[in-house]
Length: 198
Image: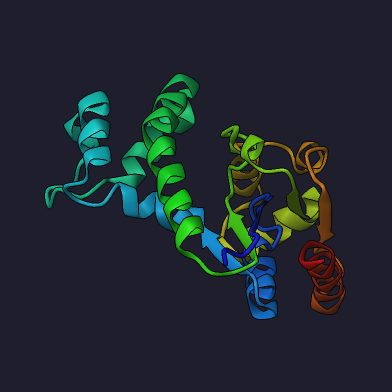
C-alpha cells in the first residue's frame, strides 16, 4: 500500500534560521530535501547543466579543474537580473526533477523541501502549503554580520539581493518566528508538525 505523502515547501530569508527549523522538523520525523544541496549536485563537473552554463556564460565561470567558479558566477548574476533569470532557467528544471525523484523514492508521510529561493524562483507554486521562517530585518542583519564577519553595509546589501522577509511572509501558510530563542521556535515547529501530520 502506498502511503499518502504530503510535500511542503519551506523557505526564509538569509540568517532567519531556516536550517535550524529544517533540522527540527527532521528530528520530529519529517524527511527534509535540501534544495541548495541539490543545486550544487546538478552543476557538478561534467554534468549537462554545467555544460549549459558554460555555453551561456562562457569559460570564465569554469575553474581550471573543470568545476564551476561560483564566486565569478555570483558576481555576474548579482549585477545582472537577466543573467540571473537565465541561470535559473538552466538550473531549476534539473533541480525540480531531482526533487521529484527523491519524493517518489522516500517512504515518509511528511516531506519538506527546504529552498532559499522558493518564492523568488516561482517554485512555491508547486506546493499547497508553505512554511516561512521569519526574523525581523534588524535581527537578520545582526546574525549575518556575526556569522559571516560582514560589515553592516555588506550584510544589508546581501540581504537586499533576496526578497524582503516581510514580503515572503505573505506567501506563508505557516510562519515560524525565529526571533525569540530556540525554545520558542521549537514550540512552533512542533505545532506545525502536528498539523501537517494530522
